[in-house]
Amino acid sequence: MNPEHARFNMVEQQIRPWDVLNETVLDTFRFLPRENFVLPKWKNLAFADIEIPIGKGESMMHPRVEARMLQELAIQPTDHCLEIGTGSGFITACLAHLGQHVDSVELRKEFSHLAEARLNSIEITNFDLYNDDASRGWQGNSDKQYDAIAITGAVPEYITAFEERLNIGGRLFIISGTPPAMHALLVTRDDENEYSRTAVFETSLKPLSGSEMIESFKF
Image (tube, rainbow, N blue to C red):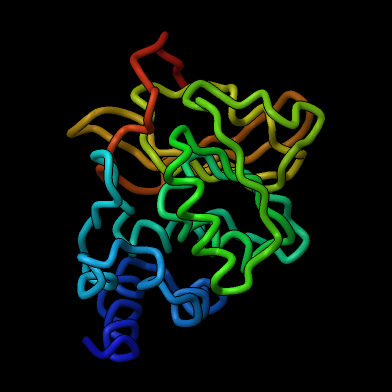
């Protein structure tokens, strides 16, 4: 595999055709070494249009879904970000590259340890990793609000616990539903008690670890 050629093809043939036109996001995928965040046996597929396994039945998102999520979140250099589901650490790296700081929560300690090593290896330091079950919201750092929240696994039904951690003007990306009816939602906190919720595209994603059916929320 020629990494640079494969990286170019990923951006131009997978990500850009999926309506990802923000050059800052595209540059992030050109710059960060996605191949460093996959298991050695999957190295040659680091840029493929698949959900690469990371162990324990979990997978990375398709690159196009990762990029579309980042474009919808519109991360600014001053943003404080929250990630639910550290996984491989690649989205953590993207959020840290784009924003000021990332808090990332992961259920499995082995994923967190490996993600930390990967992030350190490329000299990303503006992050904190936590181990917790955040499938119904996260109570850690309870006095902290966020400008952007990325949920990296699907939830079967929408809940409000995540959006309540947003600053005014903050954005939340979450995929809600069960196959075949799954929708990516962008939620913006307009003021203290008002939120805008917009379905931005349809997709399919593995459930967030620990999530289960809960009372339906209509929007």
